[in-house]
Image 1 (spheres, rainbow, N blue to C red):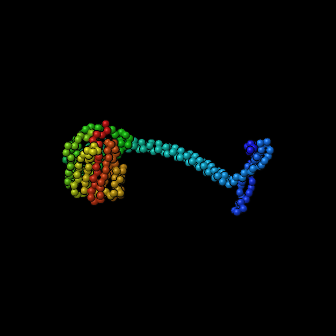
Image 2: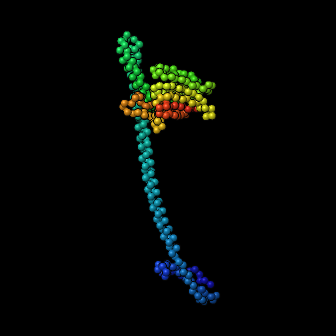
Image 3: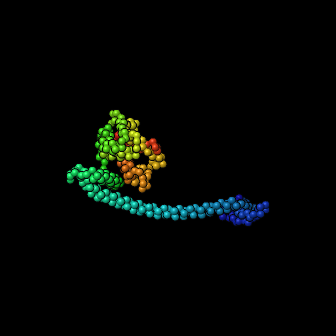
Length: 330
């Protein structure tokens, strides 16, 4: 019978592998075997090769050290990320405050500019109408130039004011139901003087039996006016077409302005909808404007839960399409 466990002896023995000549740690477990009468009959010693156990212990220690090191790095990275997040949060607050101040400044300055400019345009118009008496043709031409440039400046100021109002969330929606053909005809009528000066052919392609559109009529009109005036501005010869059709499957109305103008390269098409961005920003560019019209159209379209898409090729013209839900925001 084996003796009880507390009478066993466990020791380590240092042996050497005769073939490899390497140290071979061995654990020796010795115990007595006694007879039924308690007499010693034998001593049994079991040798256990501890190389694998020691290797596992070594690997475990390395793994524990690596885990502790990784934990320290994770803690340091987490603290750094928290610090960066706090810095970004503060910067976001500062940027938001700066943006609000910029928006408020633009809104105030645009208002201050518009008041005297409207007065100047009013007096110029009165002079052209002969309220102060007859004027000579050379003077009339100069006054007409003053009025034209004043109205151009007023348009830019109005665009800046629109951007400011949209960013500040101060441009409310006035939802109503209206007919597309009447709106398109109204847009064309307002641009009639520009159409006559351009000597371009402007056509309308309106699909029959279009449903009433539920949206902000004035904002849809503003987008169409901008798209059509841009088509007239960048088209030297050919045709400008304003079309309206229905997508029954998606329950939308598609309003498109197509021209045969200079076109836009594929790599530049995303830039035309950005604030204050024109494809030609050189001082000698051939086309005027502040680069805000299409940006305002994009923002207004977002307010109406709609989108503006562009298809264009250089030298082959462009097509801007406003896709509106038949039933917009309530």
